[in-house]
Length: 151
Image (cartoon, rainbow, N blue to C red):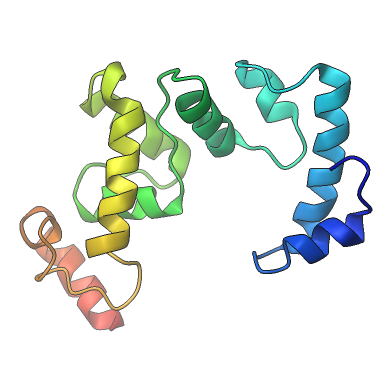
Protein backbone atom coordinates (compact mmCIF):
# COMPACT_ATOMS: atom_id res chain seq x y z
CA UNK A 1 0.00 0.00 0.00
CA UNK A 2 2.84 2.33 0.88
CA UNK A 3 4.38 1.90 -2.58
CA UNK A 4 1.14 2.81 -4.38
CA UNK A 5 0.31 6.32 -5.45
CA UNK A 6 -2.76 7.87 -3.85
CA UNK A 7 -4.52 7.96 -7.23
CA UNK A 8 -4.02 4.20 -7.65
CA UNK A 9 -5.48 3.57 -4.18
CA UNK A 10 -8.41 5.83 -5.03
CA UNK A 11 -9.05 3.86 -8.23
CA UNK A 12 -9.00 0.56 -6.30
CA UNK A 13 -11.50 1.78 -3.69
CA UNK A 14 -13.55 4.03 -5.97
CA UNK A 15 -16.76 2.08 -5.38
CA UNK A 16 -16.88 3.01 -1.72
CA UNK A 17 -17.91 6.46 -0.55
CA UNK A 18 -15.42 9.21 0.18
CA UNK A 19 -12.69 7.45 -1.79
CA UNK A 20 -10.66 10.66 -2.16
CA UNK A 21 -10.26 11.10 1.59
CA UNK A 22 -10.00 7.38 2.32
CA UNK A 23 -7.24 6.88 -0.25
CA UNK A 24 -5.16 9.61 1.37
CA UNK A 25 -5.77 8.12 4.81
CA UNK A 26 -4.85 4.61 3.62
CA UNK A 27 -1.57 5.86 2.19
CA UNK A 28 -0.78 7.74 5.40
CA UNK A 29 -1.86 4.79 7.57
CA UNK A 30 0.41 2.42 5.62
CA UNK A 31 3.32 4.69 6.49
CA UNK A 32 2.22 4.88 10.15
CA UNK A 33 1.92 1.09 10.40
CA UNK A 34 5.35 0.46 8.88
CA UNK A 35 6.91 3.11 11.13
CA UNK A 36 4.99 1.92 14.21
CA UNK A 37 5.64 -1.78 13.77
CA UNK A 38 2.21 -2.89 12.54
CA UNK A 39 -1.22 -3.16 14.07
CA UNK A 40 -1.21 -3.27 17.88
CA UNK A 41 -3.96 -4.08 20.39
CA UNK A 42 -3.80 -0.59 21.86
CA UNK A 43 -6.76 1.82 21.72
CA UNK A 44 -4.66 4.98 21.66
CA UNK A 45 -2.35 3.64 18.96
CA UNK A 46 -5.22 2.47 16.76
CA UNK A 47 -7.13 5.75 17.11
CA UNK A 48 -3.96 7.68 16.23
CA UNK A 49 -3.85 6.04 12.79
CA UNK A 50 -5.09 8.08 9.82
CA UNK A 51 -8.78 7.50 9.17
CA UNK A 52 -9.27 5.33 12.27
CA UNK A 53 -11.84 6.49 14.77
CA UNK A 54 -13.21 4.84 17.87
CA UNK A 55 -15.62 2.56 15.98
CA UNK A 56 -12.93 1.18 13.67
CA UNK A 57 -10.56 0.71 16.60
CA UNK A 58 -13.35 -1.14 18.41
CA UNK A 59 -13.90 -3.43 15.42
CA UNK A 60 -10.17 -4.25 15.25
CA UNK A 61 -9.99 -4.89 18.99
CA UNK A 62 -13.11 -7.09 18.95
CA UNK A 63 -12.67 -9.01 15.71
CA UNK A 64 -8.90 -9.22 15.31
CA UNK A 65 -7.76 -9.46 18.91
CA UNK A 66 -10.90 -10.80 20.62
CA UNK A 67 -10.76 -7.99 23.17
CA UNK A 68 -14.26 -7.07 24.40
CA UNK A 69 -15.54 -3.99 22.60
CA UNK A 70 -18.94 -2.83 21.40
CA UNK A 71 -18.46 -0.99 18.10
CA UNK A 72 -21.40 1.35 17.53
CA UNK A 73 -22.02 2.96 14.17
CA UNK A 74 -25.02 4.98 13.06
CA UNK A 75 -26.90 1.79 12.17
CA UNK A 76 -26.55 0.26 15.66
CA UNK A 77 -27.28 3.69 17.15
CA UNK A 78 -30.55 3.88 15.18
CA UNK A 79 -31.56 0.31 16.09
CA UNK A 80 -30.81 0.86 19.78
CA UNK A 81 -33.09 3.87 19.66
CA UNK A 82 -35.83 2.06 17.73
CA UNK A 83 -35.76 -0.82 20.16
CA UNK A 84 -35.78 1.38 23.25
CA UNK A 85 -32.31 0.25 24.35
CA UNK A 86 -30.87 3.76 24.40
CA UNK A 87 -32.11 7.33 24.34
CA UNK A 88 -28.62 8.62 23.60
CA UNK A 89 -28.08 11.46 21.16
CA UNK A 90 -24.79 10.13 19.78
CA UNK A 91 -22.95 6.85 19.14
CA UNK A 92 -20.57 7.30 22.08
CA UNK A 93 -23.42 7.50 24.56
CA UNK A 94 -25.24 4.62 22.86
CA UNK A 95 -22.10 2.50 23.21
CA UNK A 96 -22.07 3.16 26.96
CA UNK A 97 -25.77 2.29 27.23
CA UNK A 98 -25.39 -0.97 25.31
CA UNK A 99 -22.33 -2.03 27.30
CA UNK A 100 -24.45 -1.81 30.44
CA UNK A 101 -27.05 -4.20 29.01
CA UNK A 102 -24.87 -7.24 28.36
CA UNK A 103 -21.89 -8.87 30.05
CA UNK A 104 -18.51 -7.97 28.60
CA UNK A 105 -17.96 -11.47 27.19
CA UNK A 106 -21.02 -10.99 24.89
CA UNK A 107 -20.12 -7.57 23.45
CA UNK A 108 -18.15 -8.81 20.43
CA UNK A 109 -20.88 -11.23 19.40
CA UNK A 110 -23.83 -8.98 20.28
CA UNK A 111 -22.79 -6.05 18.12
CA UNK A 112 -22.51 -8.39 15.12
CA UNK A 113 -25.91 -9.90 15.88
CA UNK A 114 -27.45 -6.43 15.90
CA UNK A 115 -25.77 -5.54 12.60
CA UNK A 116 -26.84 -8.72 10.81
CA UNK A 117 -30.38 -8.61 12.19
CA UNK A 118 -30.66 -4.96 11.17
CA UNK A 119 -29.51 -5.65 7.62
CA UNK A 120 -32.01 -8.49 7.25
CA UNK A 121 -35.08 -7.18 9.06
CA UNK A 122 -34.65 -3.59 10.15
CA UNK A 123 -33.37 -1.33 7.33
CA UNK A 124 -32.89 2.41 7.71
CA UNK A 125 -35.38 3.40 5.01
CA UNK A 126 -38.91 2.32 4.19
CA UNK A 127 -39.07 0.13 7.28
CA UNK A 128 -42.44 -0.85 8.65
CA UNK A 129 -41.84 -1.11 12.37
CA UNK A 130 -45.09 -3.02 12.83
CA UNK A 131 -43.81 -5.87 10.61
CA UNK A 132 -40.34 -6.14 12.16
CA UNK A 133 -39.80 -9.03 14.61
CA UNK A 134 -38.29 -6.68 17.22
CA UNK A 135 -39.67 -3.23 16.40
CA UNK A 136 -43.25 -4.53 16.45
CA UNK A 137 -43.04 -5.04 20.20
CA UNK A 138 -40.03 -2.98 21.30
CA UNK A 139 -40.64 0.39 19.62
CA UNK A 140 -42.66 3.04 21.33
CA UNK A 141 -45.91 4.20 19.76
CA UNK A 142 -44.29 7.60 19.29
CA UNK A 143 -41.36 6.05 17.36
CA UNK A 144 -43.68 3.95 15.19
CA UNK A 145 -45.74 7.04 14.35
CA UNK A 146 -42.62 9.12 13.59
CA UNK A 147 -41.14 6.54 11.23
CA UNK A 148 -44.44 5.71 9.52
CA UNK A 149 -44.81 9.42 8.65
CA UNK A 150 -41.40 9.33 6.89
CA UNK A 151 -42.43 6.55 4.50
